[in-house]
Length: 150
Image (cartoon, rainbow, N blue to C red; front, side):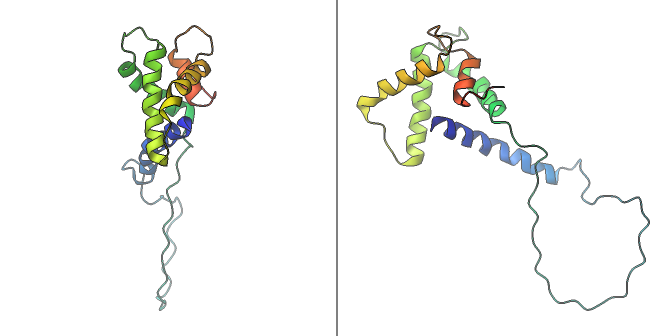
């Protein structure tokens, strides 16, 4: 669930940037044709036709692992209290519990107080793939992106 919350947050951040491609001042609004314009047809009366909007098409889908990596890069220093480039269990737990709290508020659920420590311990064990008792940025990115780091 934390992964889905982080992924949803990342998409919410990336979506406006992807949508701007269609209205970018660098791209022409009307494609230019190399063919000469055809002579205008005589005017015909037309009935009112409803116009439909065409959704903007992104050039490429967002890569969730890259988006997660970007978020981890920007947020990591705030949680790495001792500045050693690794998250110890307390630092990692503080970050994951903050994410879990956001998830719980968004879903209207609660994590019982007696389960908080066990949940944080389990998350730490899962994320610490090399069992070094600290979490590196690559380990965190892999954990939060469901093992799809890249």
